[in-house]
Length: 189
Ligand code: URA
Image (cartoon, rainbow, N blue to C red; front, side, top):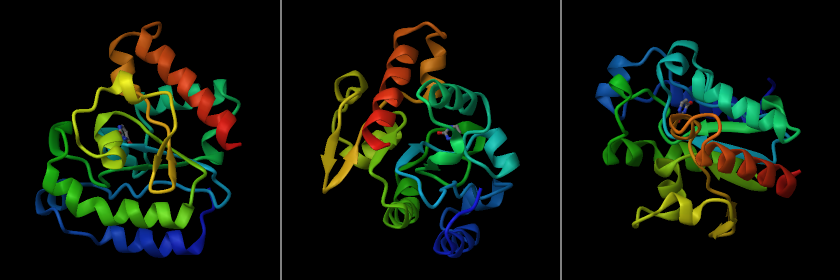
């Protein structure tokens, strides 16, 4: 995938980040994310898992397969969309990101959004949704599937692919995830 040079400059800085000492010590890769220059849609997950940490790419494990399948069903491919995470480093044992870690990493995602300037952002799961909408008592089923205006940024929250997987391939969260990604594709392309 070709990304704009500013993205590469930013990525190089991210790879040297040691703001979270525990994560910096345990990571194999800083998973910067991916953004083709023409991307109009940007997906934002929570944090890299084991496969992502190993390969240095976002959403390449089981959750990534679910995301890819939903993209294809919506007429899109991974090469056309930007993908990033709230945290760029894997929390040990895949624990939830700590508030301090989310704070330390905040500037990186903000800079990525400024560079990509997506027409629509799709936060995947509650950690990412809270990053965009604020951490008030959010119920995923109440905020998903519709566009929220966040200081001029259009945000369409949906389930995290791993969360949807827990309810099975025919569960309601998977159906909602697929429907929301299809809606995102129709709004942003
Ligand atoms: N889960 C995420 O939130 N992000 C990834 O990159 C992989 C799994």
